[in-house]
Amino acid sequence: MVDYRSERLDAVFHALADPTRRAMLHRLAEREHSVGELAEPYRMTLAAASKHIKALERAGLVQRTVLGRTHVCRLDAGPLHGGFEWLRHYERYWNDRLDSLEALLRAEDQAASGASAPKAKPSATRKKTAATARRKPRA
Image (cartoon, rainbow, N blue to C red; front, top):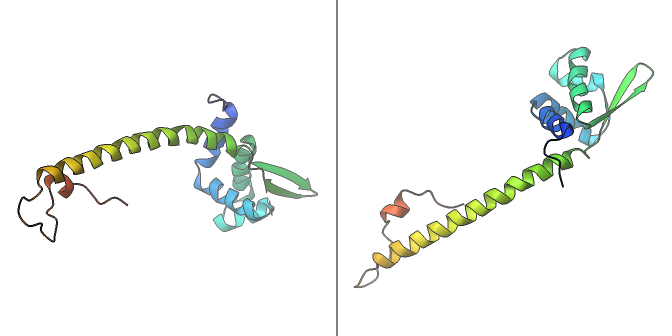
């Protein structure tokens, strides 16, 4: 069970809220990088990059190792599990809601096609009813 009031979960979502930090995590998923390597694509100072990395460290997403004067960062994806579980709760909610909507739309389509069924020869093309004309096609 995920603790929804967890400071760690708050820190994970805070860390993921910034596009630069998300890009840094993406790069760290490939391999370890130094702070300088992480800062390079953004033309930011090492101090600015370090602030981003500290936010990732607070969330537990990055582990930093100091080798002499070089700070090497590596990804620790474990804390992402808490965020994933939190999102899964809402995925189930939205899937239930969308399933209900789909059932409603199917019932509406069946009612419309049953009420407007031609008594004479069936036409080769189906006329759009008011209900189907206002809806976008399902993907």
